[in-house]
Image (cartoon, rainbow, N blue to C red; front, side, top):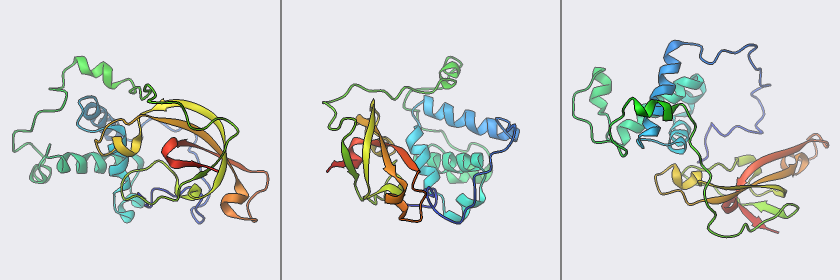
Length: 219
């Protein structure tokens, strides 16, 4: 999906200014939002990619005006309503009004808490050999899907070189929409900055991205 979230390589936003000694959470509610999202993920109600797509789908004016965990909160809220796990009237009321449908992996129990503390493993068995190897010259496809993708807009249609193969993993483009893992090979691909942004770019700068195999075509 093309949206305001995909601002890599864009001018006008200034430098990234990291906060010195940044705490894990700035407010107590942020930790609760993270716990809620992890709990829903552990029970199959949402997944990491559906949550990313829900954040990407926020209106630009909301996305830009919201803090990191405010985006998480709005995204999980929207997903739960869209998947009929929570009614819009319940959000308005601030408490439960209806019986919720069963979660895909059953009722959440204390035994699930430990599982929520560990990030899921997205490694998968490959369905076939990798199509590319380090040193191969590739071009990223010029795609503009309405659905989720992890291919940054600023590299689409550009030429790079495969630097490394990073194994086979869950494909976010299908997982975000609950259409299965569809494991794909993942590569590190390196681009020359001037190929991405023209002659004004720093000639010494290289840009690396992680690109799934369906994003690439051989030259």
